[in-house]
Amino acid sequence: MNRMKTGIWKKACAGIALAVGLLLGACRNEPQPPAPAAESHVALWEVTGPGGARGWLFGTVHALPEGTRWTRPAIAQALGAADRLVFEIGEPLDAKIAGEALGRLAFTRGLPPPSERIDPAYRGKLAAVYKDLSLTDAQFRDEESWAVALQISAIAGQKHGMSPDNGVEPELRRMAKGKLVTGLETIDSQFGIFDRLGDREQKVLLEQVAEEASSDKDDEQDILALWLRGDDLGIARESETGFLADPGLHEALLAARNRNWTGQIDAMLKAGAHPFVAVGAAHVSGMDGLPRMLAERGWTVRRVQ
Image (tube, rainbow, N blue to C red):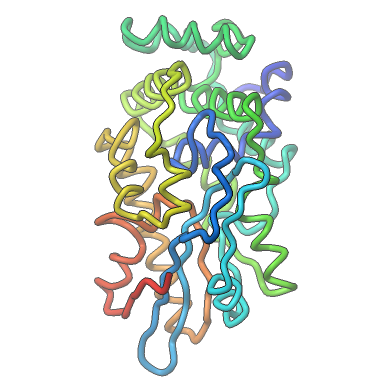
């Protein structure tokens, strides 16, 4: 790995944590603020077991349009009863820290420009994304494909007004009022998951990010609307599309991480902790979501809203 080139990197670093959320289905390229609803129905699960064991699972959106209203009394009550708040990454995300972490992994000398690594059918889409975001292929010459995909998502999100400052996590931190805050991963381990992807998976990831970033479709069933409605089945369907439809990417970025997190949450509950676990919405839906995995370990998991 060589040192990072500062031009494109500085432009992306402020949104690099957002990029991971974008890639894992937390939001779409250009969501519009939803019409104010009388009541949101964001899903919350309670996990219980012998001896008074109790915890909660909550799916988040890592970045929201400003003004989105999602909090509900049940969420505040659960967080108030919890003894700790557990995120994907425990420490508050900082652009400098994220940039340094990514820079340690993202560069390999001698890589060709990204457009030469993807199938010809996607090259025009990637070129359109570059034009829209004022980027060039040459800027990414020595960057691994997963890092290019993350940066494209980050910069596209910034352009369309998405910010992790408007996400769920900062509000939950404020609501936690001094409770212990821990993480299931670190920023280094999270980027390491991407860095360990094989060449084929990285190629597919970049192709699918180019496909989605170049699309102007306005899907009414986007993940944000599904999340606000509490439609975990819809979120599960979305988690089987795009790059997550690829078995290798689905396993590495979703299923394997969920198995790891299930083990950690299981250990917390058995040790007497009462965690409020808040992770990306895709991680709490579907056959390989945290609610199902914890239920398979013998915990009683029920949706409380």
